[in-house]
Figure 1 (tube, helix red, strand yellow):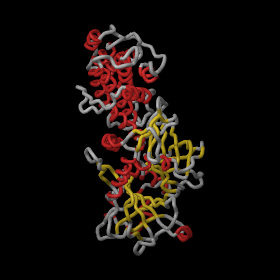
Figure 2 (cartoon, one colour):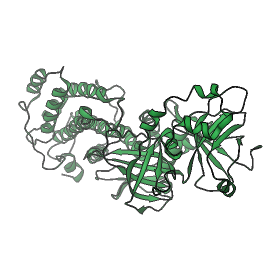
Figure 3 (cartoon, helix red, strand yellow):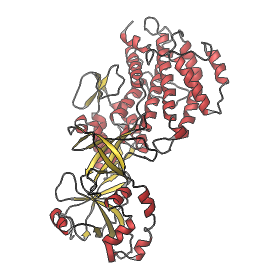
Figure 4 (cartoon, one colour):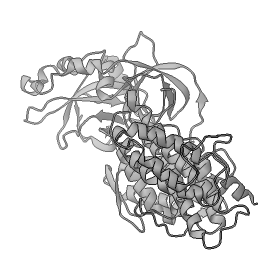
Length: 543
């Protein structure tokens, strides 16, 4: 018995034992399915989980029995999985109340079914580990279904920014290694319940790519587009036996994806995918782009999404700054409105704009936006966060469980590290990735955009009585004479903007901020729902 086959048939996690709720054959499993309260999604899900726990842990089943039982249970499992997913799809994260446990149960449905199919493949190859005569197709189907459901378990966790289910990667690696040993990994798949099921190799590489690009760094809609890109580029992303500058290591039997700590067995070459991303960025308009796979459907994605992909592809770029242990607490506030409220001394935008724009603000312009100040202040509470570690590029932060904490990838976050003597001293970051932990805490990576964020009001100078716009004035982290402006909507182009801010005359002289009016603002990046503009005095018109 070879090591690859021995691993294929192991119970995961080791030591798990449970009893089937029906007799050990497919006919009695079918009778048990008929007794399930299918209209009660939760009760059916719990019953299926118990059955799958037993099916994936009992050693008493021999030959094709485990596979036959899994085939009987699988239609009900897929039906219940779809119903479960609908219950929390589109709901704000982190999920609360009765919804909080649903993703974990959905993960386990797929994970336990995958374990069962993996062991079913081993059963049919017992005792030597060789493919059975005239039954090789059944073994291939079992391995294909195991690979598919391991992937579904991972995808559920990624969609809700949760920890990955234990042993999902280990089971997937073991299934793939066995398929390669018996040359099953590229055999075409046929599945009556899942149309267009890819080969084991294709699915495995898709999941490796998805892990590499760090799906927690993308919003849920972006994840769908990124997954489509992984599907499109899997065929041109080879797994090699030797390392290279463009490849990331894939472990042999560790419970982790590519790029982990375990010694690699193979290397996933990213050069084709990365080249397509670079080409799409070069051809983009700065806001959106089209990624063109060699085969497959072109994928539309934001330029910001492509930049996130670029960072993920390069291990060196992802680790470009030395990280230092931290452990101190900071105050945070989320969203442009919340940070503006805090940076302006806890004033709603109406009061702030009246003061900094003065006579330039007409009653007509003010009327359309003056309401809602109380709502903004209610959403602008300071929330403490623990800085786990930090670098010149940003922070890794943890927030305690809070039912009012609603984070999303791409949201801006204000970071206050000063004392109470300077309540308006804020830095600006952007949430680049999220992970909701089992104890309710939230971990996030925050990229630092500016070490100084000032509240400003912008207003067009044309004939129309435009309403003023809330914005933040930022000093770029790289220094120089440029200034950045973050707004929640597009700024009018082709006309100067009047700028209102509070600043001491001496400070204005020292840091050489633009005075009175801004002209020739250039959109440099779209950050989710926000727009980042640059003002460069050396190339701008009259200020």
